[in-house]
Image (tube, rainbow, N blue to C red; front, side, top):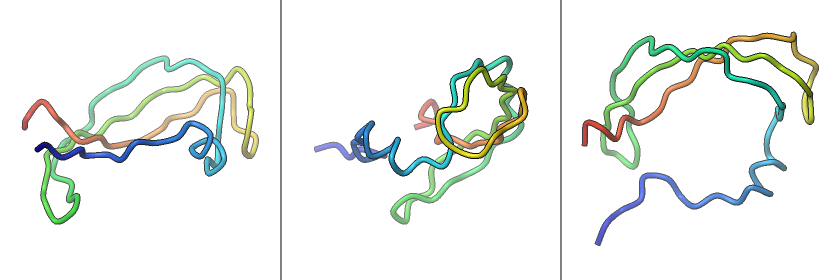
Length: 80
């Protein structure tokens, strides 16, 4: 029996709970670091990134500049 790291998600519920929805283009992604992230009491490796994003259309949320930088982290399944 295997375990899923993330629960199944509904697109409708994700859109409803989202603070921001845009149409745009990811211009560049760069890894900025790495470390560990805890999930259900277990540490997993993670990678940190920044993405340069250009906005073509705002669907939901407060207005944004035409370009912005998003910082985010993801579990790194390559190391499992």
